[in-house]
Image (cartoon, rainbow over all chains, first blue to last red; front, side, top):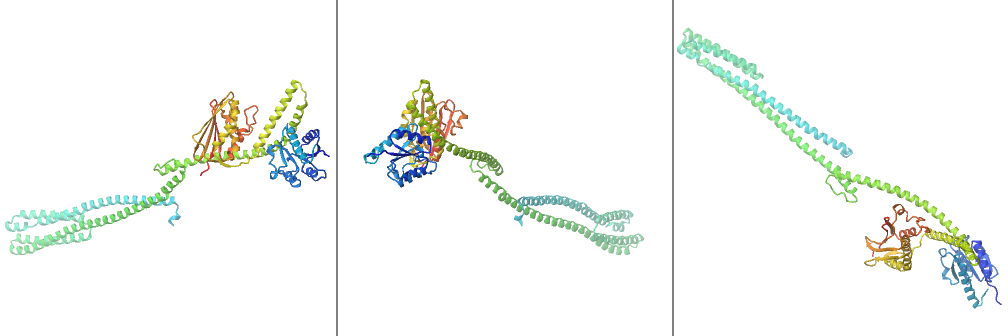
Length: 131
Length: 483
């Protein structure tokens, strides 16, 4: 039986978090929210499995995008979509294939949705999860 | 001891000695001429008079000879009268001589002559008495004796004359001796003056002119004033040059201190502004997202639509300013490689081909051969050139042309970009590289600042020159990598 895919949205701005959550919920995803690194890690270590993380690494309690490394160490296979300004994003750790990038803009929600769908679709084909 | 005395005192000392020797030498010479003159005139006046008197005395004595003999022969009493006259003349001469002599030796000689003459007169008178009385035989005998006395007296007179001649010779010898002493003194003075002159020349050359010359050469760092042959004049010229340099350096120092202070202030303000821009960007993006979301669903009237578009446009503008500012405030990470700036020029030409066409700008590249290699980040250099060219295109409203000229000179690759735009006024020209300075309605004022900083990060220079109405030239200079 297919289960609903769970997405963790991490962004320092509550309005951005709320907007992304609203848009993704409409697409049928289950949404979890995190406003800083500590909350991300809480969700990651939670019993509930995550299917994807939408992450803006510019978080209040992070320095030098260490959160990406921590996620990669904890669950290397979890897909992460970095939703950020290109000038703030230094690239994936160790050329990890599980990290995608969507440039944060006014209309980036469309690109973000496409990327998320593609990843979830790809994973579904391998029998992992789907909306 | 000598070296403990200051140079000024040494020179004064030598000059004083020189003046003393020369002046005293001259004074001695003047004194000597007076002395010689006095001596000679004394000798001539005194001794010559004495000598002449001595000769006259001898003549007066000689003239007395023969009268008594004539009287003996013819008995004429006139001979005796004449003899009496000559005797008076002799006595007169004797008095004259006595009044002239000074030395005791001469006095003694005269005394001897006088006493001898008295005796001679007495005997002679006795002879005359015999002759008068007719005793001619006794008279003749005594006359013979008296004749001997006469010759003794004449000899005494001759000796007195010789004494005078000897006196004159002695005076001559004395003056000769004094002249000899004076000559020796003069030779010593000449040698001393020469020696002091040499010492003075040595001090002047080694302690004054030599150091002055060296100082003049050392101070002439630019080697432009040349050697005029006058050390003091050359040095004063160079000191004036140094003072001008110092004034210039002082001015430059004050200006660079001011610039440094300004730069420090700017750095603080820049950090604050960067933090602020970073903070603004986050809510701004949220606003953009919500606007996008609104735009998907809103059904607006024409005016509302116009308002909505203006809001979206202005927010985009604010976003561009924030983005550009953040890019400017972040030091560029240069990935250096050795490459020819000509390659970057070509790729910028290729990149901007369509944009140039839309601006109706014709771009021409003047190049004899590709420029030699420089250490550069091609992406950054490309951004700098794009910013400069876009700035030129925006300035040339209604089209124009840009000429990119490449040349290598003095170990530098020089790329000049000249446009046919309206040019930049002098007041604006000094601000074109200032961040946020713009004359355009929608400019961010960061394009040329970013270009300037990129070139500086490459160890090069970006200069601008312009005249209103005659276009603008940007000159990009980069150091060539030495093979």
